Amino acid sequence: MLRALLLTLVTLFCFNVQAQDIHFGKRKAVAKKTVVKTQKADVKQSAKKMTAKTTATTGNELGVSNGKVILKNQQKSSAVGTDIGTTTYDLQSNHGMCRRIAVGGDGAVHAVWTRSTSGDIAAPDRGTGYNTSADGGDTWADMPSARVEGSLRTGWPNVGVTESGRIFSISHTGDAGMNFAYKDPDGDWTNKGVGAENGDVDGVWARAGNDGAAIHAVIARQTSFGGLTNGLAYFRSFDEGDTWEGPIELPLQGVVAQVWVDGYFVDVKGDVVVIGLGGYGMPVVVLKSTDKGDNFEVVTVQGTDGYQGGLDPTTDPNGGYLAPTPLSDGNISVLLDNDGKLHVWYDKLLNFNDVGDEGPFFLSAFCGVMYWNEDMDAPRLLGKSTRQDMDGDGIAEFGTEVDVQLYGNVNVSQISSGVDADNNLYIAFSSTRDGAFDPSNPAFLYRDILMMKSTDGGATWEGPHNVTDDPNSENVFPSIARTVTDKVHLVYQHDE
Image (cartoon, rainbow, N blue to C red):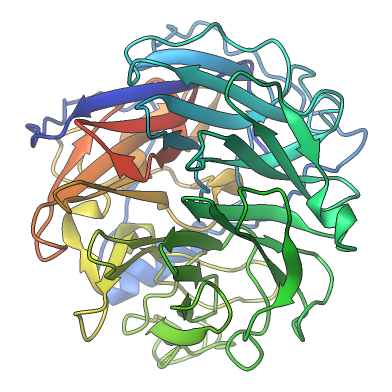
């Protein structure tokens, strides 16, 4: 269930590109904890306690209150960075993140988020919140008092800047599919109903990327499309969004059975378009086109060999423990670096299999960020991205019942990536914070935003650096600008 929140803030934080010292302060736990041990027998027992049930939210739900909870006797913590907007619609994604912040050719920074002030999940006023900084993130405009689409209700925005300086936001509407909102220099926001104009009104949860005048987007649906139970449609524009081709079927039949909710990402560089996909029980694959999306080849990053679906951990001699197969829960990011090399990051989910309606089980101690590029034979775990001993007591601890809410089934998730002019790579991700329990719900661990960096094309990684470092609040849904300048620009959601 979506956790009730009194207030959420979307903030931006910049830190110098140079490596940072890492410091994890010792914190006092505020709830009873149990240790997740790595021995097989103990892991099986602990994993049974940590089940997660998630239901995809489109944002089109009606008449459902989120039942706000006011947290009493709790010291308010301040967010790191600059507050650029607010929202009471706190589900910015079901799983992976889209591109929520972009740097234009003039150095201006543009950030978007799903905005609402109604205080409930129905959110009749839901739309795109937008703010901008003309000086590289040093100062920001006033917080917005309206959504960029006017009265049109939308959600899940992606932001980009074209070669002429046009700022755009691609999102979905409740009954008309993909929406393209754009603002030319010195102009006003204008809406273009791409889904409705192209006869594709069922699309939800869009992802988009652009380079120059070309914009490429995918949008899922809860209906069949392209031979899949839950399909994915592809759209493209070569004139900054004035005209669009689509919906185009992608070569996914026989590759995946369905598309995971918010389990895909798009990146573009020149003529090359890449679409990464992942999800629970699915392979991690990338569709790659070198001809502007005319044709795609399938690149399999992580197969499902060794996946033992349907085994009962109470009777199976191996306990259903899937050590050889690091599945994904749909938190995926793909990036083409300055040389055009493909990089892929996704969350690692080692799990027990479903047992009745109690699964899927997950093994929190093994969650982390998986990484692969085109020079590697197989993906590998970025070891320092796994759960950290943040309170300094020598063990990584959890509540007796871990509540992961709608962030999916993993404790390390919501990965976002960027690259600078020297081809250095950067990622940001969300991770539960050891020992930091919500006083109103002792089963719920707060999260922090962490970042890592590679200066050698992904061979080695620095970090993680804990950006938010706050045991008294929830910091989630990070997105970093694809273009890293002298700063990494990060937008994320902070709340109490």
